[in-house]
Amino acid sequence: MIDSRALPSFDWPKLEPGWVWLCGAGPGDPGLLTLHALNALKQADVVVYDALVAPQILDWAPQAIHEYAGKRGGKPSAKQQDISLRLVELAQQGKRVLRLKGGDPFVFGRGGEEAQTLVQHGIPIRIIPGISAGIGGLAYAGIPVTHRDVNQSVVFVTGHDQTGETPQAVNWRALAQGAQVLVIYMGMKHAGRIAAELLAGGRSPDEPCAVVCQATTPDQHVLETTLGALENDIEINGLKPPAILCVGRAVLLRQVLDWQSMMAGDAPRDLDPLGRGRPAEMP
Ligand code: SAH
Image (cartoon, rainbow, N blue to C red; front, top):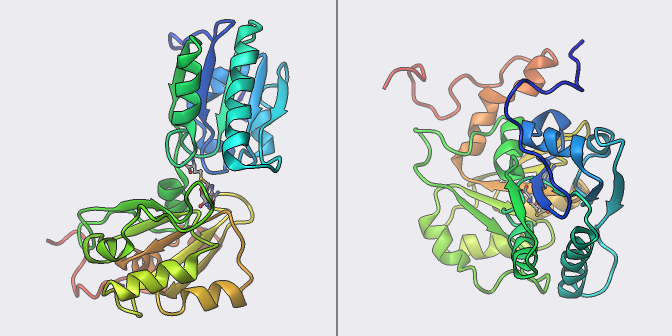
């Protein structure tokens, strides 16, 4: 049994009173926390956490008050402002504050905004990155975000903007042309519109797609489909957020890299899903 209370010996930073550490908690599996996150959990007086943070992670800060900062209704901007100002307030009270966010705090998580508010109020901060769902979540589904035979680039994009609509600032048709693999956060609500835009931009209806729900948690569920069938398949399978959508040939690699199914005893479905006709190690 590994002693989870012990951190390896290292000059761990001290969370001082009046400071806020903005920290990523990873996509779900508590084992995907960083050691800096664990160090922070052990020192915090207050942990302000999001809906997407696994409850078990909070157990590692038994000495702290756990304050939920998830959806409380109201306008998104007002809510965000409330959270940021609450962090300022706690720091000004001299608390050691750990702001724990799902995935990476600076990836579609408004961590940048919170950090900015803190700095503007003169609160000292530290940023602790985390494993983002768009990378770690796909890895748990057996989908590598890059692979030399598939892509030299990857686009991380959100399917929502601040108003909850498909972001106007995103030129989906240009992405259809330029993005080899797309990793879409918050894409479930507008999956149909996003797929339609990508198709209008020239992507094939046969383009492989995956929907990875609750990635890295015990409830992880993965759907493999195509761009043409995406919206309908989400509907008939009753898939719900949180989910990452992945569009591109990287999804095919799941046929050989679905390691979770292999751990459960299944054989790989296809050892050469890209049809290279030679082993992966051969150029
Ligand atoms: N900062 C987070 C993203 C926050 S936005 C990160 O770096 O991962 C919230 C979106 O992230 C969700 O709507 C979903 O698209 C994605 N997401 C977060 N956790 C997820 C999980 N465990 N499984 C699937 N998608 C997840």
